Every structure is written in C-alpha cells, then in structure tokens.
Image 1 (cartoon, rainbow, N blue to C red):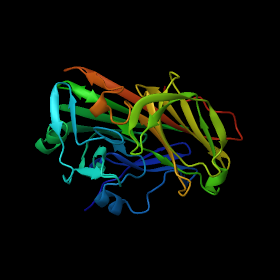
Image 2 (spheres, rainbow, N blue to C red; image 1 turned 120 degrees about the horizontal axis):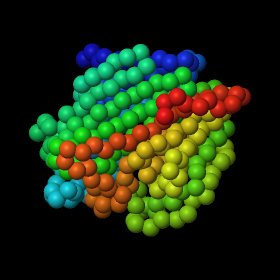
Image 3 (tube, rainbow, N blue to C red; image 1 turned 90 degrees about the horizontal axis):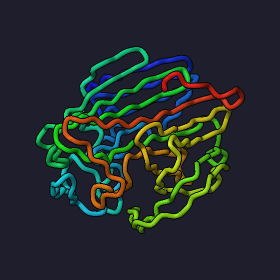
Image 4 (cartoon, one colour; image 1 turned 90 degrees about the vertical axis):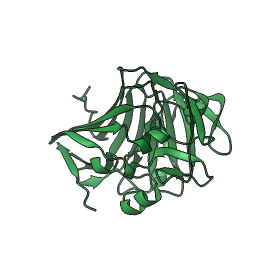
Length: 307
C-alpha cells in the first residue's frame, strides 16, 4: 500500500505527516537529526495497533477501566475483539481507534503547514464513539517549533477525551544523561492497572537527569500554559500546552531510549468516570493546541511567531 507523505520545512526544522494513516507524525528533524522515536517499523506498529512518532489518541487517550461507558446521554458497549481497537498488556482498551485505520482528507498543503479533516460518520466509527462530528488537525512548522491544533466540530454533543503521545529522544547522548524538567502539578494516584482512583497528590517541580528514573504517571496541570522539557547534547525539546490540555501523561521507561510527554484534554478513563471530561455542544467547536519547540541550549531561547 502506497502511503503519501507530506513534508513540512522551516529553518532548521523538518516534519513529516501521514494523513492517510491517522495524521501520524513520523518525523521531526532538527539540523537533520531525528528527534522522534519508535519509528523503526511503522508497518508492524500499524498491524499491532501500537503507537509511534506523534500519534493522535482518538476518541480517547490512554486506558478505559471497562469496555463500556456512558457519555452525552448515550450508553456504549465496546467489543474488545474489534479490529478497530487495541488492548494493552492487561487486556484494557487503550488509545481509541487504531491510528492506521483513520484516513484524513487533506484540506491545505503548504511548505510549512498541513491541514486535514476526519469525518466521524462511518457506521464502524459510530459504533465505537456514537457522536457525529468532524475533526480538523493543523500542523504548522516555524523555524523553531511545530504547533499542532486539533478542532472538534460537533453535529451531536461530543465528549472531548483525546490526546497525543509524542515520543522524543536526544541524538548522541545516553538516556541516563538526558535532563527532564516538569512543572508543579497534581499527580493522579493510579491503581495497578494504570487507572486513576480519584485521589491526587502534590507534585513539585522536577529538574534533573533521567538516570535510572522509571516513570509512567498521569498529572493534572496547574499552570495556564505549562512546559515540559527534555535537554541534552546541545538542544532542548519543549512541549508547551497552549489551549485546553489540562492533563498530561509522562512516560519515561528506564529500559527505553525515549520520553513521551503526552498532552490530554481529559484524564485517563474520563469516558467511564467523567474526570475532566468536556462536552462540545452541537454546532459548536472545541480547540486544543500544543507546541513542540526545539532550541539550541547554547543560545538564547527563540520567541515563537506561531502564537
């Protein structure tokens, strides 16, 4: 199967997206060096349903505690054996519909900007998430940043529970020497399945080398525009939540050479328990925006022109 790549370029940054395969971001290069991870075998990832690069998690991010939910007045029972869905290693449904099965229509393709639309009206999609709507994603590349804007355009009332799962790595430096910076937040207490139990704990700013840190945790953010950074080998990668991302998952397994900084519009399991779940009214729009900045650490930080 031929997959059309759309390449963006601005200054020292280059990005590649696959609208026909979930609008998956499959490359983000700075000075020719790849900053994304888990790209080695995308066909295997697509077949398995696992995530890679910069995937959109839609219509929910992370896990559901049970294969059923009630939202916007509708009762939904999911079939875990559906080829549209993916299970984690504990048998829980995770990350919504597989990215490889969501084909987006390109609306705008410019050298530094790509806009695509997903029409959520096919019967098989409505069986999983029975809320008619459209989703638009705009990826805009500036010389120092990539901004991703996602907009729900509702026909029916639509729960907003999506997120992204970007995997980052720093070329030429061992993982233990990468420096991770996280802001003050509220940490969500998880059960042994990775599902929030409703309790929260204070989490103070973290700024230090990864070392042997092994982290897979969910957080409620406190700042209006919080930033999360990964620094080393002369560059800093920063994820900044600009609009309507009030939760984040940080996934930094010590045995892997990546860190995932995951913007989320609602908490894990929000479709089931309603935690942080927003509702987009019919004929209204909901927009969520985050930005990935890349800068040399030996020079002053750039001011983005993409605000």
